[in-house]
Amino acid sequence: MMVAVRTSATLLRMSTGPLPTLPLRERKRLRAMRNIQSVALELFDREGFDTVTVERIAELAEVSPSSIYRWFGTKEQLIIWDEYDPASLVAFQERLADTEPLEALREVVSLTMGAAFDDDAERIKLRLRLAFTNPSVEAASILQTHEMAQLIAGIIASYRDSDPSDLDIQVAAHGFVGALLGALRHWYASDFTTPIEDIIERPLAVIEQGAGLP
Image (cartoon, rainbow, N blue to C red; front, side, top):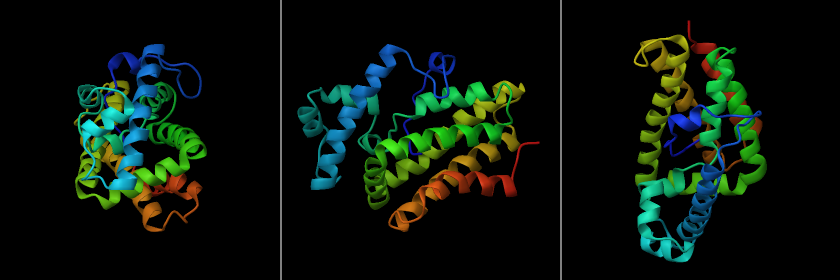
């Protein structure tokens, strides 16, 4: 999914259960960020992305503009940021201890996206509509796929005692993240009529058919 990827090394070492329970401080931060994002999404949907200012979002969310910039970095990230990503990266790192990379990714994506769509389907649809109808947000999403792929490549490399810049690792990581973004764009273009199970499962199936880590 489209995400902000400011995940610390400390978080990547902590986990309990299928989707890790993050430290209390991190959970509080994520709740605060979700509230800000909710305010922003409502304003963007009603008044347009370009019209709404960070200052107006901050006022309605009862935070300072500096807090928004500190947590999100840019206005585009108010749409792209995804609260599920920190726990997902932790879970992926855990599963690599005894699972091959693509299977580990399959497990984490199925678990995370399944939970997200169960709880937040309409919110996700709104984020995708805003992302794919605003050029600066779509451009930021594309850049984000590279950043997420680099994180995934780093996690894989750490368990393989390899260089993260290894070509096979880079291709697999970018292929996976790009496939997910492509599936989400397809879902949006289909007016969200494609079964969500296909959006979750099909990207990994395509990658497995045409690519893999030796």
